[in-house]
Image 1 (cartoon, rainbow, N blue to C red):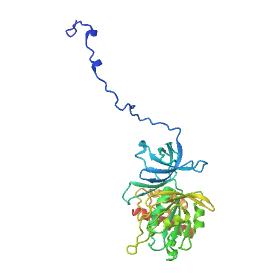
Image 2: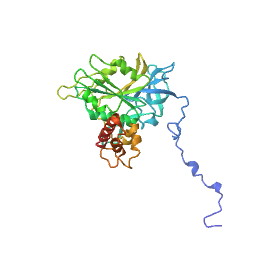
Image 3: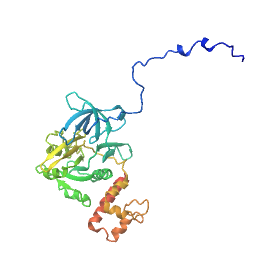
Image 4: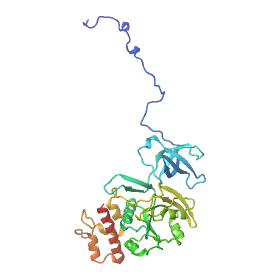
Length: 347
């Protein structure tokens, strides 16, 4: 017998473990788990707008039961951006009845994502809208004066996102728009001219049919006025340009998705707040080149790391221009491409 074994039966020893008090779960809830419910009964909806943490959504879009509802974000999505245009999955009460509130539990795959940064050195992106396929850039011929570089920045963001750009120049009764529009002659996108008494609503409306078009523009250019004319129920606030500073006053404070129903068909207008700057800290310059498909094919002959800017060593674009491969239209597109690349390079 060992010195530590006195031969006593183990049953005679006190059961200390039995005396340990196990505290009950005060909330009577189950332990947290990383496994999330599948939400097989979720319904799909489109985000139309965001207001103080509440999302206006369109349920059964295009179907017989199409209706709007209000939703909140599920806790597990608190670190993910949910923006206008997103397709989301809802659970809970999505009836749209007064006082009802559904819950967004999933964000669908995005086909496009329009972004901007606060400035050119800020790589933190601000998502503007998801799933838009066209962008209508609104610029005034005067009051405020049009800015080529700002339009260039919109174009860069559109090309980076894979969104087709269009341009409308307003207030053509105040100044001749042609000198300004000449800067974009090589790009070949649709251009609309609009005056106070002659708004091309039919032409613009036709371009909106079967598309999700995001409207962007400097404050005071008449973007909200145009939106109200196309969608009378929108009731977007309009403002004026300060006579001293020449700057427009911000009127639209949120991004909203509005249903357009015109003579040629239906589509969606996505109105965004006016901005005075558009940072490109998030953009990949290769996305700009890819949007110029004819020039991108030639640029494949460029040496690795070519900037494609004027005077770049052994740039195939310069060689093609010198050999007469591009033609007059191609030279204009090359000039536009290089201006956009220069805008980005200076960012």
